[in-house]
Image 1 (cartoon, rainbow, N blue to C red):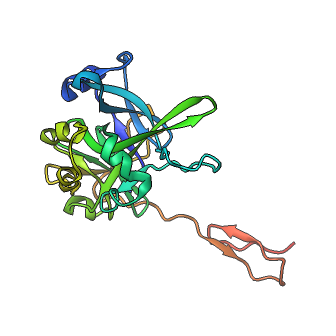
Image 2 (cartoon, rainbow, N blue to C red):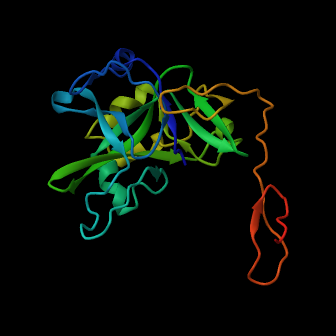
Length: 245
């Protein structure tokens, strides 16, 4: 799955890249280096008169057909191979598609964060959106689509986000596109993709630092239980043994 990503491009550059305008207004800055589920994220969708707009939605889709009496589940990822099968995603896939904007995405292996980038440019992740009534207002949420990894990603993780090429954006956003036209797009990215080991960002506004390619994370302290009388053992960290008083 993809559970964290970054947006570091200037808003003016994003408008030019996606041939869109921010709505209701362009922010002065949008640099965020640890975007997580539940955060407000920029998405590209089709407005009236076939015009693209960039708006903010919460990362976490609640299907509109969810039972209102239950605590709704927020979906952050949807699998490409089942998106047109499961009812919670099918209607959004067919009627409410969007692009989630990113400058990179993270995956982890052996406790180390890896940052993937696409040719140094902001890119579009295939996504869907939906709405849900909440306390007299409306919650709008989105969900990105994942697929099998390409060789670069497979070395780190067994899934990757669906990255759409610029020549696919119009068809993905076109409300008249059919599943037979859309499903072939949901494949592993075949273009340039780089990956580097990085530190964990200090916060959402601080970029991560690059790590050496041979960096290995320090092993986590183990939790052990010292042998004592039944029911009186204590767990200790770091492999040590706590002596009885």
